[in-house]
Image (cartoon, rainbow, N blue to C red; front, top):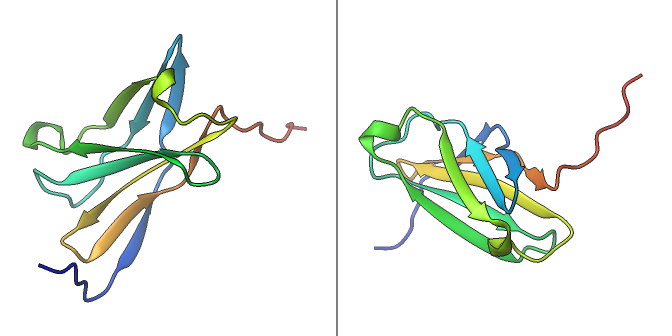
Length: 113
């Protein structure tokens, strides 16, 4: 069956929260609205050049409305000075939910004055 879409709309999601604890990195993302049990959510961890890994999370009835949490060992991350994280899911083969980009290590913010 070919992947045919009548149209695609993009609904923006907030960036995932990334927390470093020892040799682990925890990625936490809010629940995505309007998805069903069995839906896959894909998390991407990639270098600025686009090389990296994809982590697939299959949602179940008991975790559809809860934040999604993934824990990775730092050694699993792409080798780069900066790793970009985003996540997304298809909804009814018509809409794409895609998050804003999060960065690890976090980018420095402008000094507050």
